[in-house]
Image (cartoon, rainbow, N blue to C red; front, side, top):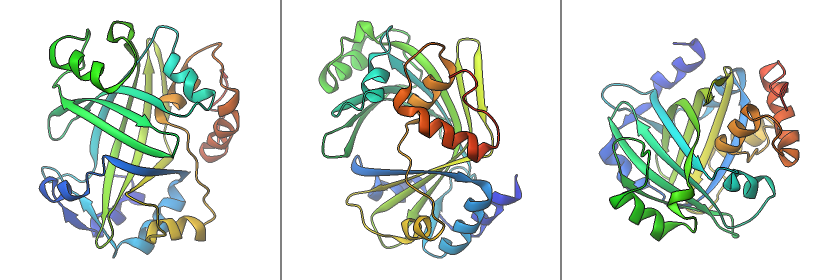
Length: 255
């Protein structure tokens, strides 16, 4: 393991059963993009205030996520245009716990994220039975129009605040796979703070201390912008340039 992540061995563990109290299916999300060096410094300062999720003896957990969109990528386009009340539709596999879910995320015009999901072990190739009924109830698109768009794979640490209702996810080893195009963003750290109501907890205070600004681009939109030729990405351009500076190479060569 990269020595930058060994700091997380010093955190107290929390298991999946204890995590039930901080599901936060209706919440505010705040994202940050930063470097490995910044990550290590921040974790050193908050290690006494958070616990880290441990599944089957492992703290670094693999996520494999297949996002769905229409053939013309309407869901991506809504996000790119800054439309409020927008959706993301995906199947996520939690590798270590060997579970899978079809999930619908709705971002409303008040800045809240509402997530609903049902168990579905494997990513659907067509929408039938329970998964079709679920989509019909939770989002406005005809399930027949929703097809696989891109794989977004990464490894995640999940931290839980010891006294506040807050979850913090730390994602690394990000990989986008679309048809024959593969993009890997090694060296990038994506942190997302999930709270019932936003308040200045330890991690957010460290973001301010280290002058790390909020960056709200979604992994799905980032992946589409980096792997699709000729697609509109004007509203993401500055964020892709920020990625270039963090990673030290040109992530937007194909933009």
